[in-house]
Length: 178
Image 1 (cartoon, helix red, strand yellow):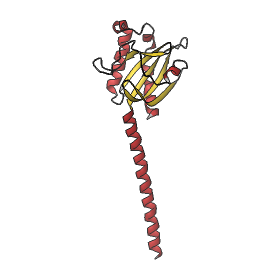
Image 2 (cartoon, rainbow, N blue to C red):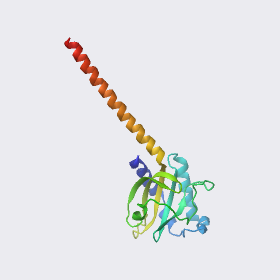
Image 3 (cartoon, rainbow, N blue to C red):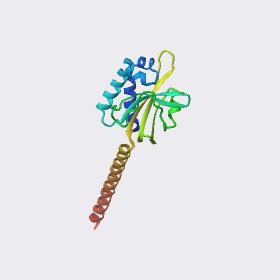
C-alpha cells in the first residue's frame, strides 16, 4: 500500500503546473488568484475521482513551520484548509523534504485532522532546483490497517491450507502402508 500511495502521489505531482505556485503568497488573497484556482480545481478533481484519497494538498515552509498553499478538500468540509493556515502537528519528516528533493511515505501518524498514511513529494522548480512546495496525499490509517489485516489473514489461511494438504498426504501415505 505504501508503494501504491507513493506511486499515486508521483503521478499527481507530474500533473501539477509548477508555474502556478510561483505567484502565490500563502495568504487568503490567493483565493482570488487564477493560479490558485487552477491548482485547487486540479486537486479537487483528483480527490473526487479517487475515493481512497482522503485529502491532497500542497504545503510550504516558512522558517521551521509548515503551512498550506492549497487544499483539495471541499470548502464546507471540516478538513478544508485555507491558504496560509499553519500545520500544527505535521509529521516530522516533512521538514526534511523541504531541504532535500525527495519523496516518501509516512505513517501511520496522527495530526489535528486524524490518523493517516501519507505520501509526500517535493515539487521542484526545474530551472533552478528550488523546492516550491511539497505535495501531500493522505489515506486513512484505518484503511491501511484493514489491508494489512486482510493480507495477514490471507497468509494465515494459505498456511492452514498447506498444513491440511501435508497432513492429508501424510495420512493417505500411512493408510496406504496398512
